[in-house]
Image (cartoon, rainbow, N blue to C red; front, side, top):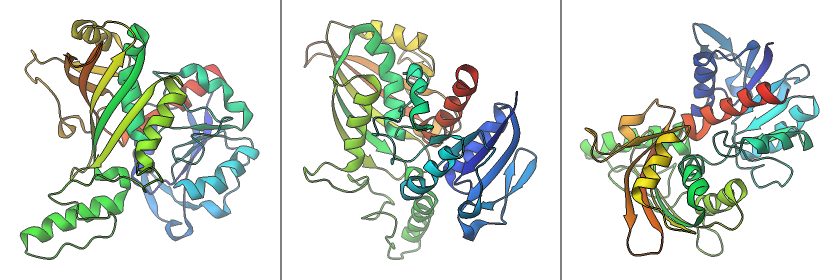
Length: 336
């Protein structure tokens, strides 16, 4: 059986990656439509060896569309995702708008595939935040082994998480520094070239950033309400790939050897042991890869039942586009 798909936000970083992954994984497509804002209508974008002509999202009729893979920004999704769902399509939304809606499942296929069954309440499935996805993929095998109680995570997030304009800004600022130009700041609150910025998204009333709140709230919805999460999210001058240093406290004793065994057996996880030739991996080394890569696994002697590890993932793939396509694959396999 084949399906008609629509990709909303097709001209963005994640939209491009969704189209690439659909083609790579031979998703059973009868037809695929690229949608974006009116200013992009008529533009040609690649889909494998073919080209798709971008259509205006505002004018598109979703009738007859089976699945919508949506990544246009939260405000756009708020309007068009319900419209597509009402027309009969199942919407897999990559924005933040529906993630905490109690009637919308928040799904990472390697972690909570059973949650997808609740999609019929609104015909919408939410893709978690990129930093949350890679963390819960790594936490899941450990949680099954010893029950996670508390997580302290520091993230080092690439500029691609903020979109194409942010990537362009890093490039321009870096080039400008070498040309003795004053960096122009638009996409971020401060200069990103040769710098790190401890702010992702807006500040909330308690001085936590919204990105940090997302990691805590989404982890609870996906893995369990009792898990405590302290997140510290930082933007770094890297184009693609998020990194996280994760400290986990468990309900019972767990050794580094136990954790490594669990990582080796976990779907979607690649363990790089310190005894290996690589020793550990960085965002630069995993660009274009699908797995979450875990390294520097060690015990934390300062707390009861503590484990530390370093994890990296391609935020445009597993952190966004790949996770959405995997949800679609699970949807057609078990539910449609």
